[in-house]
Length: 64
Image 1 (cartoon, rainbow, N blue to C red):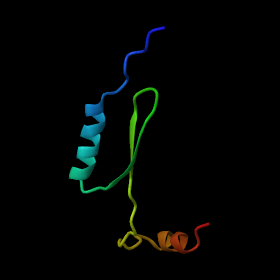
Image 2 (image 1 turned 120 degrees about the vertical axis):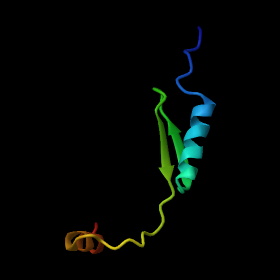
Image 3 (image 1 turned 60 degrees about the horizontal axis):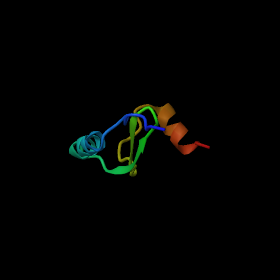
Image 4 (image 1 turned 45 degrees about the horizontal axis):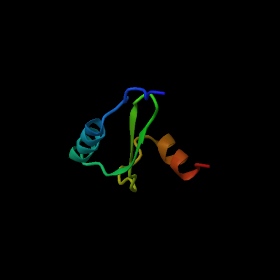
């Protein structure tokens, strides 16, 4: 039984990580699905940005 051709290459993942770091993001996890789609999960830190509208502020304080 032969193997299927690879849907992604290591250099694709390395380029995605390098691009995320160049954008100033910290990578938490990389996921590659069987179709070859690369998903990068970033480290989330507390946002110092103020809510733009009162509804956002209310939702932030009343989130479930």
